[in-house]
Amino acid sequence: MKDPAYINRVVAQQADGLLIIDVWESEEALNEFAETLVPILIKNGVTPAQPTLLPLVDITAYVGADGIS
Image (tube, rainbow, N blue to C red; front, top):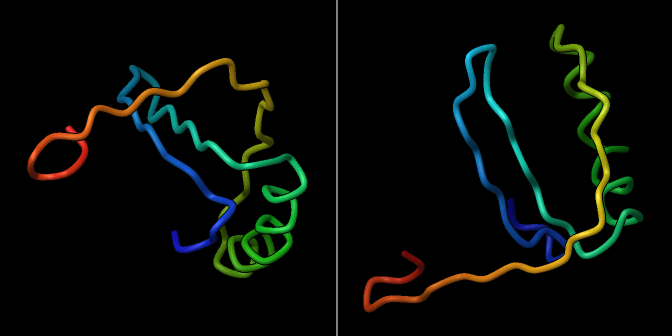
């Protein structure tokens, strides 16, 4: 994603599918992106999941010689 309000994504495998955690600068930024994405998903037969919104307490990235590691 190239949206400047989009910060990071973490994806983990679970028994029943994937857990996707996206970090956005604000709820408003996420909603603005969703206004574009949701119609595209629906048009292509995908039912969008209702996101769970939680306030971010901390985010830490370790940067190595080859980028984030």
